[in-house]
Length: 60
Image (cartoon, rainbow, N blue to C red; front, side, top):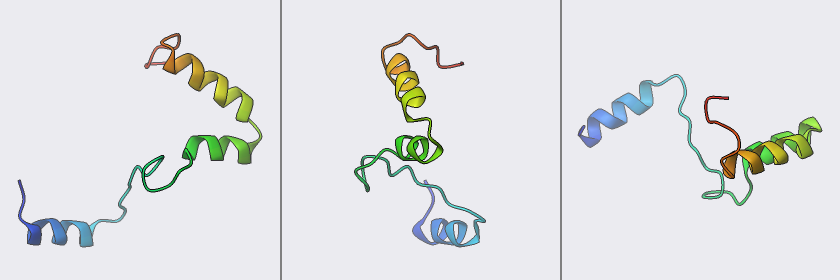
């Protein structure tokens, strides 16, 4: 466990910080919004359905 000051130093020196905010901070799922924007919503929706149902191996 790092101290608050060590964490702050690390955070401030980082080139980038990423957060997973899908369905937590925001109501939308980012992948769904990106798929809509790219015009592939149906394909991504089907792939998500298959993956969530266990029909699509994680490594694929």
